[in-house]
Length: 85
Image (cartoon, rainbow, N blue to C red; front, side, top):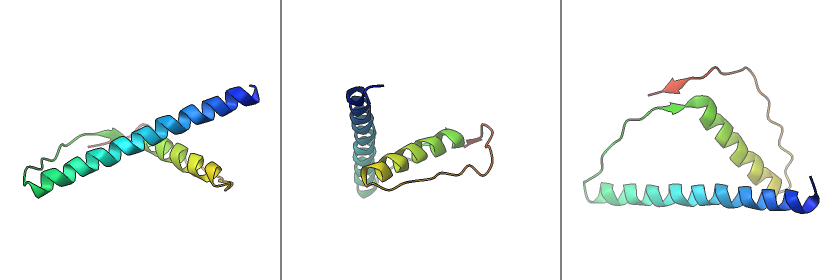
């Protein structure tokens, strides 16, 4: 892959990750507003643990790369598909 394509891909990934982070912050602020208004409702939902770990790993790896930190991620054991609810 050429350098320009890699830079474009990296930039696009950064935009996507930052957009999702901003979206989560805005949702958190809306949740806080609901708490202040006593209209807060808890939604019970399930999620994939391996998917959450993969997302966290990608986010931390990206931030480490931006800061020039070499990040080595060790996989202790494989996690089968697991859902928490």
